[in-house]
Length: 388
Image (cartoon, rainbow, N blue to C red; front, side, top):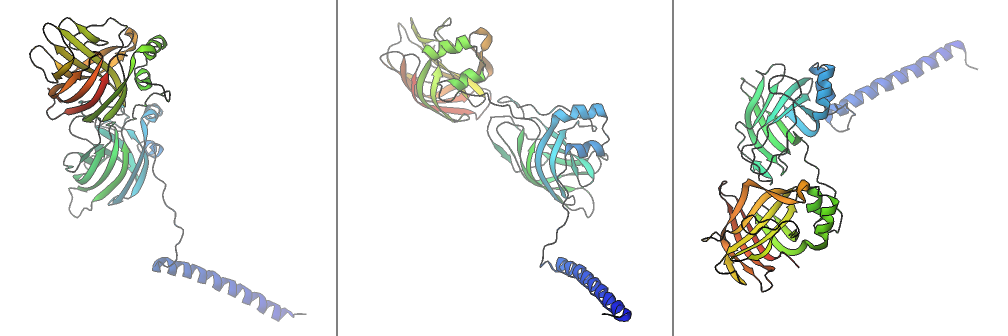
């Protein structure tokens, strides 16, 4: 049995060993952390959210209610003079911290909206501005000259801004989302650049309507929200087989299009629903959708005393319009009659189309160009049919 002195020595020694082990453990962890040989768990700040921005900017309850619908998902990383990551941002006004409307998806040939996003990096709130020049062609675009296109500024102190930008920004076809890989420098002695990379969004892409799989022309019916009776009529005798390839500013392979002869056919230029000839006029029209847009292709020939099977120019010659492609929509309130956008269309500039012996089908090999937007063109090749 241990005497009291030996017991005290044993307890003291045990405490000393534990103390040394504890100190040694801390020292080892510190040493390994400094040497980099052993990873040490370090608390990593979570990506900032709209809630962080609301708190830092002291938004009122009514402002928060207005900001929540325009709080958008981001995936941005910051390094350099500012370091952190951003998971959410809200659309902010250009002058203060109040929320603003998010970007709307631009129509074809409309200017791109400007992104103004309230974000939090570290413990401060900033306004990120992305301004893509040019007009929408519903295609992905990239910009390598960022002068005036990207800016980061403190919302509380706008004089603290990073406006000298280099790198790349890209824009998706929707015109309201994209990517960034850029370095920004502020105009201050000894300032270090801020590098921003990742995905950004200033609006929500329009959701495409649900399309019945395997149903011919279904995307056209759904996108234009046509009524059931009109869809039934078109399914029965208006959705025809096509084999047309579109390239250039519109890229698609068209396998079906609608020529709805039931509703008040009108021959001639823009003669929606028509397939055939009246006297010296022949018109074949085709309605179809590509992505979130609808188009009307019009083949028009005028030939005295009558139009016969054969080959005709796709460009305008004399009284013959040739080939024209319109952007527009099918009016659900008027049985799907096509309403053309007179500001967005392409006219035949070269090539030909043929009309077969049945006067309801043929081939097409044509180049079409915009009269109002220099450089915008569409090539269409293949075979067409406007009626059974």
